[in-house]
Image 1 (tube, rainbow, N blue to C red):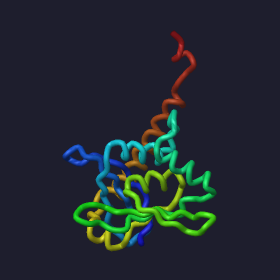
Image 2: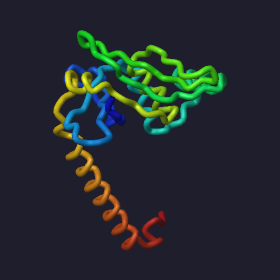
Image 3: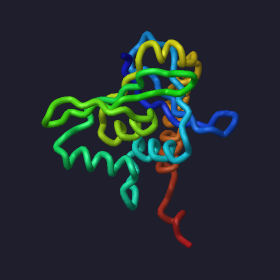
Length: 168
C-alpha cells in the first residue's frame, strides 16, 4: 500500500469531477485520478479545506456515528480497480476490535479527510490506473512562487499606503 494525499479535485475535458491522489513519499511518479460525482467532489473539497457547513453533511454524520460508538477511522484504502470501477475499504478501530467496511472511494476519502485518517492506495491500483505526474511538482512550485509574489506585492502596498488614501 502507498500512502497518498488529496492533491485536488478537478474537472476533466468532459466536465466530469475527478479527485487526484498523490503519493506522499517518492519514488512514485504517478498520481491516481478517481472519477466521482459532483456532490462527492463538493464533500471532499469542504473536508480538505476545513470549511464549516451550516448543517451536517452525510460524511459528517458518518463521523459523528463513528464517534458515538467509541470508534475511530483508522485508515482508508483504495483496494482495487475493476473495469474502471474503484473499490475502497474503511478500517475502523472499535471497542470490539478492527472492523473493515466496504465503501465507495469518494465516500471513504471524504470520511478520511474529516477524520484526519491516512489514505492508502494498493500498489497495483496505482501502477495500473495511475497516470504520469507531470503537473503537481510544477504546480506546487508555481503556487509557492505566486504566493511569494502576492506577499511581496502586499508588503509593497503596506509600505506605500497612507491613512489619507482611505478617506472619502
